[in-house]
Amino acid sequence: MNKKKLSKIKFIFWNVLPLFVQKFFLLIFYYGYYSEVKSFKYLKSEVTKINEKKYPLIHLSDGTKLVGYGPEKKFTQITNSLFANQIPNFHTGLVNDYILRYKYSHLGVAIDKFEFPKSQRCLELFFHPQHKNMLRELHSIKNKEEISKKFLPQKNWNIIEVGCYIGFGSLRFSKILTDGKLISIEAVKENYEVACKNRELNKAGNWEIINAVLWDKQKQNFPFDIVSGQADFLKKNQQIDKIEKVNTITLDKLLKKNNKVDLLSLTINGAEVEAIKSIINIDKRYLPLRILVPGWYNLENSPRSEIIEPILKELGYKTLCTPGNFIYGWLDNII
View 1 (cartoon, helix red, strand yellow):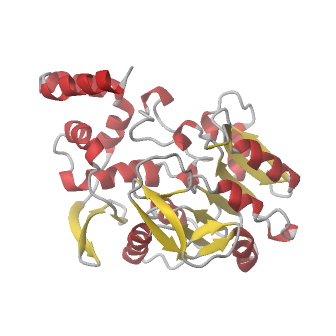
View 2 (cartoon, rainbow, N blue to C red):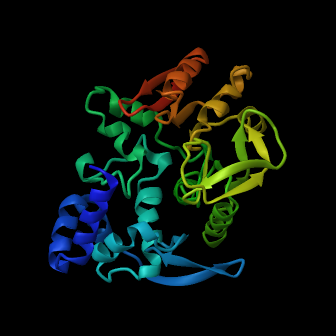
């Protein structure tokens, strides 16, 4: 279907069809997302400030406080229809991120499981590729529960999350690590500041956040693209919001500094290959015991998993690459 015809259909849907008809079709196509919204409970919503800019803040029933972003324009019509005044409009983007980045976070892709099928995850809008590559939902893998247990975080683990965005997943896992620590890397300055606010409000003393780009070399004032509020290294001729500069950090230096890393998660929108290549010659004692890395982004017409997985195997990892090119890796010496 060409863009002109699709635009016409969207215009008719939003401007001609009665509201009850719109909601009927939305519930069919977005029922899984709708069910998550309906089950969402919070104590109160308010507005906070970071550097004089306003951000939505929600208090969860367990005492957790989450700061995030307001509604995204491209989602506004859908979220307004589905939320139906359940949540203040300014907070709909925050609730969306609670579902996709806190409850079903990228760090939890090996242990979490949805209560509704993949077909109801409206991947093209709200859900991320990780949400169709979750380990416990891979029916073709007979020992998936056994592998999943290897990734179940323990209170004394040390975890590194690269590409933490506004820190929801890191915050959730930091609560488990009562005798461990969590280090997050975020390139985009504003995302980093929001993540720091989430750490401050929740008094997460075991959570360190670093504003940097993970790359294969140490560089000062490294320029990178920002697309839809996130660092992007894909160079796909898409609309760039702006370009920022930040210092880089290499994965080998990060691992050596922290000695023992139980879990490494890389979600860096196209820079995964550079990150993995930086540890090819590292002393094996510094290798993370477990690794999560998306490999679905193409590089010269082939998924990056075709480069990443062989490197991990050469380093001694057992690997599982999903049909959607998400890679789970673990070393033999873990239980």
